[in-house]
Image (cartoon, rainbow, N blue to C red; front, side):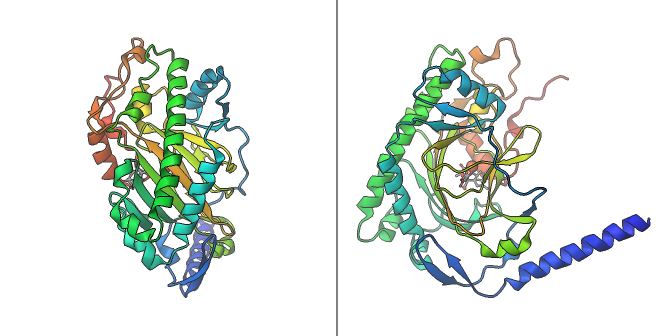
Length: 368
Ligand SMILES: C=C1C[C@]23C[C@@]1(O)CC[C@H]2[C@@]12CC[C@H](O)[C@@](C)(C(=O)O1)[C@H]2[C@@H]3C(=O)O
Ligand SMILES: O=C(O)CCC(=O)C(=O)O
Ligand SMILES: [Fe+2]
């Protein structure tokens, strides 16, 4: 009893201190972008989510590393998708020039005054967004640009933001997306080989389809100096989730923040590497492999000192495509999921919160 009262008092003091720490930061503050310092009206930090750090951030050294120039890598690839649903690739063949050109366009865009960036709002389905993620109440310490990879439709709103030279942005985007899509298809073909599937295009053809519903995203996480005062707390930049598509290809600058969840539910920090790509298995690939590959739960924590910029290509199938476990992978197993179209899944995923398990609605109820 005495212990309970003591714990209650201590935790009340802690909650009070934390809420004070957050409310102190309610006046205006400087938001630093990578190139400029701008005075912005002070966001109420209480609106953001925080997580408690159990131990200081240590980088995980066990992230599978796949060298795409080695044909043998297909077995390592399969192992990585089964164990982590996540791996890093080197010798990827994407020209560094394409990466740096798009990164500098992204930095230029995010350094614009808010009123200019907001000309490309709202982000539904494509455009500029800030703080709000999706349409169901999720928030993060992030601003972003969501784009379709369909070349013709980089929207008019973006052209107005890129004013004098929208072609430069469009060109950097097209070069980057084409190269990354090619790499994603090579990876998917190596996966199919590694899984001994006869048709090695079974996954890649979905991204190659003219109607492929793929998305591209630029995220900018400004530094948040105020979290330094919180010592054992971190602010969420992008809340935990799995990506709904088949495969996601992520590249970031040299700022940390990305974490993935392991099978035991623990979170590990991914050391940033601007010259490599990180690959996530998405929900749709989990279904097509009947759960053999795991779609990885991941999140991004805000950094107190440095801005993080990430660019992610989400390779998705055409809307009409039926998604179901591949018969050749079932080997007498029961299907864990009922068949659905990508349209159905996307609609359901986009009606859910970031952290929700979106596949649960599509699982088959088994007899046991
Ligand atoms: C809260 C949401 C944002 C999201 C749509 C959703 O309702 C659930 C999935 C989210 C996600 C995660 C991966 C990609 O960043 C994204 C573009 C996607 O396809 O699914 C986002 C969606 C979004 O930001 O609109
Ligand atoms: O910005 C990042 O590093 C990851 C963001 C992410 O997971 C997403 O946009 O789906
Ligand atoms: Fe993601």
